[in-house]
Amino acid sequence: MNTNHPDNHRHGRVWMNPPYGPGIDRWLQRFCEHRNGIALIFARTDTQWFHTYVTRADAGCFTRGRIPFVSPATPSNHCGGPGCGSLLLAHGTQRVEALWRSGLGLLIDLRVKQRVGGPFPGWSTGGCNATVREAQGTGGQQ
Image (cartoon, rainbow, N blue to C red; front, top):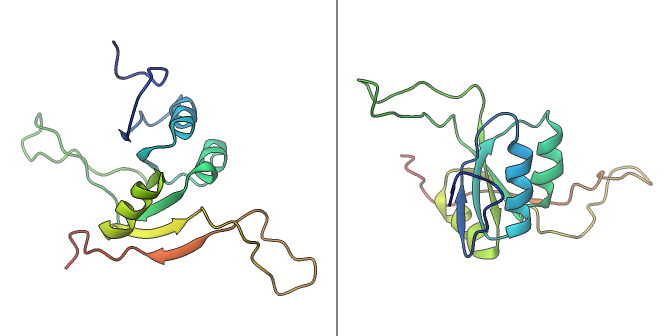
C-alpha cells in the first residue's frame, strides 16, 4: 500500500505532514473527514484551502518562529527554513489538549460555538468563534 497518498484509509490517531504545494487541499479534506489527529501545515492564511479546512478543525496552534528542516544528506543537517510560519491543526479533544500542553505557540480553540458580541448593533464576527490562549507548556522554550 502507498502510505503517501491521501486516499489511503487510516484508523486511530494520525500525524500528517502533507506535501506543501498543489494538492494539499485533498490531504486536508481527508484529515478533516478522519477527525482524529494533528497535521503540520503552512500558515497560509491567504489561500482558499486554509479557510476551507482550518475552520473545520477543533483547534490550531500557530508555532513560535519557523520550524527548521533537517536532512541527513546535508553536512550541517540543516536544509534551511520554510518561507512562512507553520500551523498545527488538531482534531479530537486529546489532540487539542496535547497542543495546549506542548507550549509550541498560540492555540486557537475552534470548538467554541457561542457568538461573540461586537461593539456595534448588528455587528458580526463573520463566523469566527474561537477561544485564544497561549499554550502552557515550555515547548523547549527557556
